[in-house]
Image 1 (cartoon, rainbow over the protein chains, first blue to last red):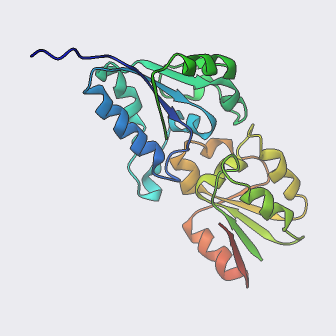
Image 2: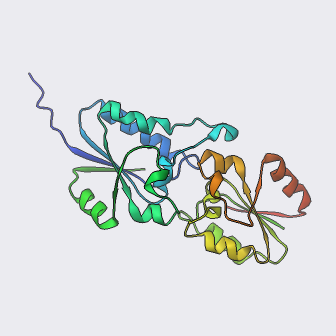
Image 3: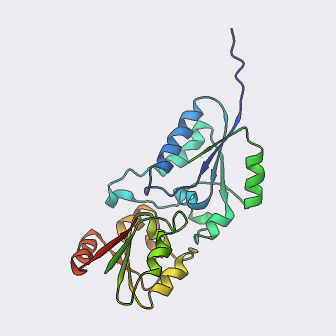
Length: 124
Length: 99
């Protein structure tokens, strides 16, 4: 019997800074797993989550793995929809030029509309 | 007294609580996710700048470098390495960690 293969719209909501807790890395692992299931995957970065995409991370001195290059590799897994909230960048003195990957910057209201289009939301 | 804060000011109120209890001459050390508070343009930077009027504020460089924010430290905040962290602990008779 052939599988029908329902495709759902998934949004992974990233709200935590990298390194200070394990959420950012764990979230990224789950995103990579989701790529194996041929779903419609989007990533949102809001609040401290925007720091996950900061360009130039170097955790050598804190003896932690630098997982930030993986965000650039997501394209290779057909995960190309990355959304970053403008207000979150502004509150942290960051701009789009400080990010290590191409993203779409959305205002909070647009982000809310995006969330409203989703079938499943998973928060990290 | 040395105060140590390790949580992001966007996640927890520990930085605000700490700064409300810092007395003149005290030292504050920002580590882990608290280092973001000492970066230019951050919403919490004004609070840190205000604290600089009466207290010393230090920030742990390895944590800033990990987070790609080493180039954005606000003026007046003193960057320290792990050796400097140990020096601060030994120089201050009391240490309070704001967990």
